[in-house]
Image (cartoon, rainbow, N blue to C red; front, side, top):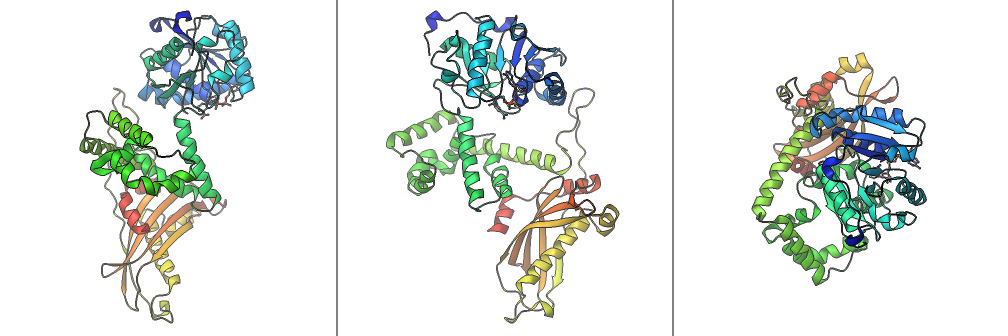
Length: 490
Ligand SMILES: NC(=O)c1ccc[n+]([C@@H]2O[C@H](COP(=O)([O-])OP(=O)(O)OC[C@H]3O[C@@H](n4cnc5c(N)ncnc54)[C@H](O)[C@@H]3O)[C@@H](O)[C@H]2O)c1
């Protein structure tokens, strides 16, 4: 980065009233909505003929969420204008956020054009997801004020912005941009070095690449991959990132124990990922980084913090998933969040039956096909309990179709045995149920099943949302702990 001595002075943060968005698609439009909510007047330049319509729709959609979370008093959602002339769009602006399509050639020439018409004391940020400012700034006359301000979609809701300069960017411009984003409520990571893909995208992409490998090799389904995160590590990440998560996986010994104990067995997965050698220096750096991140919090402190967070998040996500967003009740006229009514929870009844003689095979035990039948009867009972009964199905011409199932046969079942099948709701969506069952004889676990069922309109031959009454009942069914599902799956 270039020396601070030759840096121009950038605007006083308190004096800025107008900002400019270049490109007003998903990201630029999201930025515009966020800037408006922060009380700025927003000038927009976007060559698309329908840019104003699209932006209007985006701001209308984003405004209620912004009003809940991030809005200053007096913010005006109509304080924006679209300009056809670039110089006009940046005239009198205090900051420019470029969010044009991700093409190096386009960004290089666009940033040079913005730079040519914009007051040289104004910092210009780019939303690029992957290009370095060093390569994007090559044609600009004043590259010292060009920085990357990489947001996450949607930029009006996700706080993180990664800020980094190129080789010719002044350190003071990076500082100024970091201060500006922080001032408007963003969570800023100010990076000293350009890293391909920045930080969070590098991590996301590594995970995404593995997910695609697993799908490609038939090792896991999309649903399994998504649930492996949403019902698994994803619940920890809002509170502790991947490094502190592993710090706790090492028990009382923290990251040091984690690396010393598991390091050798982790070599195989790391090698699959083209990982670096676990040198003593890398090991020590990671351990030291965890100590810094943990600050003065002990392992039990961190565990308590993590657990309290996970419980709160699970309650929230269960409410959102179940009853049409029960956790996001509208605010009352006084501006306080209305307390949601809590109807009585529904416990799913166990399904009971006796093993019939025609279910017995030549070995003298229940044949595997009849496990499927019994689990099917259990699903019928669940459907009745949530209001998807025969009358409802016939009136609406809908039914629940099983699209995936997984059975484990754990023990033999004899003629006349009394079967009890416990049912649990794992997750629910507007058109989907994920159920898990445990089949027992006299308390002994003999089989488990998980099914995914889709709600289908048989007339139209396509999936259909559950009715409000059914969703209301589903929302009242207690979700089961991941431990229960883990037990069912083994
Ligand atoms: N979508 C994401 O999840 C995401 C997340 C972070 C960063 N980004 C980055 O944000 C930038 C914009 O991505 P997006 O998803 O909003 O794309 P988008 O396609 O939704 O929007 C791009 C907008 O730029 C306009 N445009 C086209 N040519 C232009 C030009 N020469 N000058 C100015 N505007 C022009 C288009 O009309 C469109 O409105 C990219 O650099 C992308 O990498 C995207």
